[in-house]
Amino acid sequence: MITLRHFFFPMLALVLLGLAACADEPAGGSATPATAAARPAPTEFVLPTLYPSPTRDSRQPTATPTVAPTARPESTADLQQQLVELRYTVPALGLDRRLEANVAGTVTVVDEAAGIAATLQNQGGVLVDLQSALPELELAPLPEGCTGCVQFSYRLPLSGDEAEGWLQDPVMLASVENYLAITLGPHWPAGAVVGLRRSASPYQVAHTIAYTAAGELYRWRATDPEVAGPEQAEPPALPGPETVVAGEYSVTCPGAPLETLYLRPGAEGESVTATISCPAFALPPALLPLYAALDAQLAPLFAGDEIAPPPSEIPLETMIVYEQPDDGRLLLLMDDTALFEAAGSAEPDSLSLQAGTVLSLTATLEESGALAPGVGGYTAAEASSMLLVRTASGMAEAVWDGEPPAALAPGVERLEAVWEQLAGPPLPEGTPTPEPSPTP
Image (cartoon, rainbow, N blue to C red; front, side):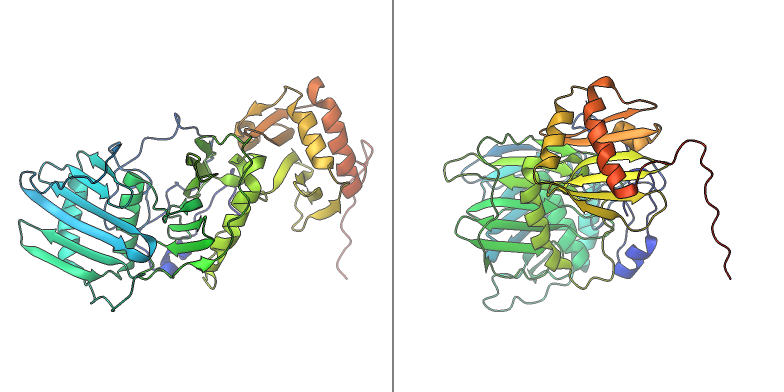
């Protein structure tokens, strides 16, 4: 499983997928909590790389884009010595984006459908790669009436190279989608009320899902040369109006993609966008059901893949984690299921608790005032007892040696009672450990 404490990057995954880069986290490192202010500075994205590497991160460009609404951005064709022009459209999605760049390394990207534009400086490396990659690109003739086909055109004014047609190269598809998504934001079809985009990870290419108010479901991968038409499906239940959605829910997990959640609660409501990383350790309870529904609908995009992402270290619906590393770990889930994982055991034991038990215990622990935001102590794993609680604002923790903090004692006693139901009472101090029976 992907773990916050130990990480081994399976190079075989990339070999089997036939991809050209490596993981975005160095192997063997220990992760630490991250916030918007603490996130490492982004590095330059270089086309036509599909996946990030220690020096190439596909999640953010070097420059910070300045996005300004406009009814119809004016053409930048009058910029001195234009170097690159390209256009990327998928009519079935209402996606229509273009890029223009000049010799000064200034790149302007425009979303024609949304009416927004972004300008980035110092993009010389990207332009060099584009000028070498585009002339080598093979574009097939567009099938008649194929509104889901990725339509692509480019022009290099200085060399005179230009072409248009159906883009099918998976590396260029992923690269162009990624570069435009990180500068203009993910694309959502018209009328979208909820959407989720995941960036590329060591296990999967970038992919997107969106529901519209008209009951249409769109889902596609960045490497798809043709996007399927919408399916008829009602959107999942959105969080209630009392739910305040933060701009970021982020914990650093090795190999985890960067995700963008989009919400438009009502016909007249303002849209909300949240950045997510490592959702099982970062999301608040109010967003878990929605995220789980979107995640389930994305699974068919990768059905049949030989390499699947390993499961998260804890289930998404986990509300409480109580761990004593030498003895085991107790997990309480949102549906009042208790799971106990004994140290060294491969399979957990489970128990159904009385309805409302987990929410009641979560509230008791949260109200204690003894929890600190984040998962830093849990990640470090340097204490004999560790507690994670999913609070209204995200995961919080407490770690201790010996007796628990007084404010947590009532809640911990209830956790110990569940632990004993699943694992049995602790052996009296001084009881010898039984020796394994000899094999006949």
